[in-house]
Amino acid sequence: MKWWKAIKAWHRRHEASRHPLPREAWQQACRRLPLLAALSTEDAERLGERAWAFVRRKRLTLPDDEAFDLPARLGLAAQACLLTLGWSDTEANEAFDNVHEVLVVPDAFRRHVSEMDEAGVVHEYEDERVGETWFQGPVVISLVDLAESGDWNGFNVVIHEFAHKLDMSNSLDADGFPPLPRDIDPREWHRIFTAVWDDLQAHLAHGRPTPIDDYAASHPGECFAVCCELFFSAPDQLHGVYPELYALLGRYFAQDPLRRLPA
Image (cartoon, rainbow, N blue to C red):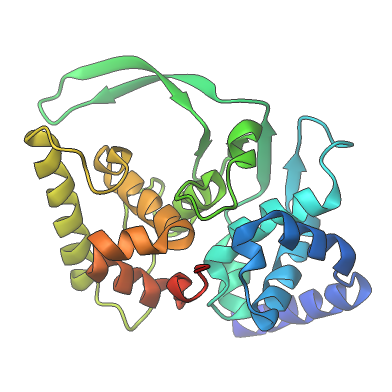
């Protein structure tokens, strides 16, 4: 398969040379979003190229194409690609092979959910969501909540949903166990995330506020996605309560967002 990867890499380089990054639009995207404005010149250049490639290759279905200008599209793509910024070009390009469409809907939406608990009892309820994704389905994002993403406030619906896509790279469901680099032992990953999970459950069991959004305690896949949100958009908060997990995600993403955090 190496020859096929080489051909794909050549095709991407050739395509990039024919479609150079629209720099003015990219600079506008960076000015609009504090997470992007904090990047170094080198990181911003690399992320811009990846975001531009994402915009060209993925289908973006938007509520209003005319109002959603190119800087807005680049900003959305850049928040997704931010997860892969520390990885090689090959790793970054392969990371979202399971992403074919990003569907932006006007507002939060409701889903009828049917779940079976450990005792075999089925629970049905209506769930309001700001985003969702499936293994081979689109990434769905609420426009209202997209507008609230991109700052250092601990909330980012794009990072959350694309963390699920990374999680699904080796399974049909988000289980909190994405493909790991060689320098991370799966047993270490399991130990650290289990400790965080157990701590969240203990807080809930004793009626105490959880150190991070309690949605992380609803499912291992949500625990991973919420922690990824915090890692990139509130790294000081995650590091303050779970420093070992922050360090683990730093190795996984090959990034240290704390260094980018404005004073």
